[in-house]
Length: 78
Picture (cartoon, rainbow, N blue to C red):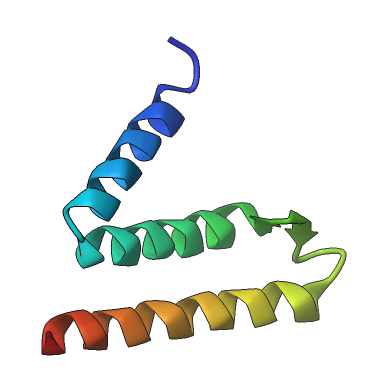
C-alpha cells in the first residue's frame, strides 16, 4: 500500500480526537519540526524552503516549537 504512513497517521488522529490524546499532538508537532529541520522545507499551506525564504522558514519553526513547548507544559499540568 502506498502512503501507509499517511493512512496510519490519519487513523491515529481520529483516535487522538476521540480519546483526547494530548500527547499525540505534541508528538506530531515534534515530528514535523524534526522533518522540517532534516529537509529544510515546511509544508504549510504551501511549501516554505529555508533556501528561498529563510526568515519565514525559521519563524514557522519557532512558532511550531513554541506550540510544542506550550502543549507539553499544558499536558503535564493537567
